[in-house]
Length: 231
Image (cartoon, rainbow, N blue to C red):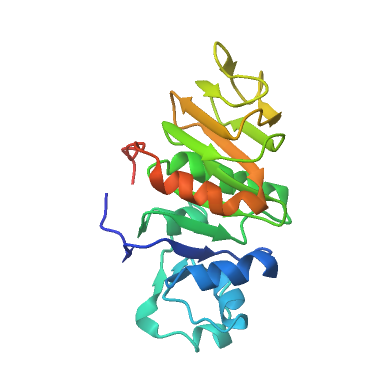
């Protein structure tokens, strides 16, 4: 695998070309000192008063006026069309956590493509932030502190099994697949939720207000998935 284009010891913000709700973007800009744009996401950052530290993608959505405001050495053109700009970015970023906005709406096909990348790049810890939800791929094990009665949805991207505590409907003994069994609309039954899964294929979907706790739990998760062989 090639060396990443950007390496950072702190969580970073990655902005795509879709909707980035201001209520979520502003605190992420304040939290993340390093900001990366996926192609046309540079427009969103510039409008927010932030010059991207890097722009990565095929650059088919980056306007000439926006490009003129960004130092040339920060713009990384990846011409291949076999992957999305989100994939191009995630595989070229090395950071403990990536917060991604502008990838969950409004088009469903774009959302599905972004969720596929989360599973494909399971070694990259990333949270996609939307207007209503925060979504991340579950690491091998994770523990979260959450209010009782909170919506805690799980969605499999392939065959995956797991164990849980603190959920109204436990996962133990069940096979999850997209076509047969999902785990959406589960809810917390205790203030501590623990989850173990046997494959990098289970998405955690929480109300966006729980983004800080999801980020904390991902950063403190003891194990991580290995990178896939393909680059």
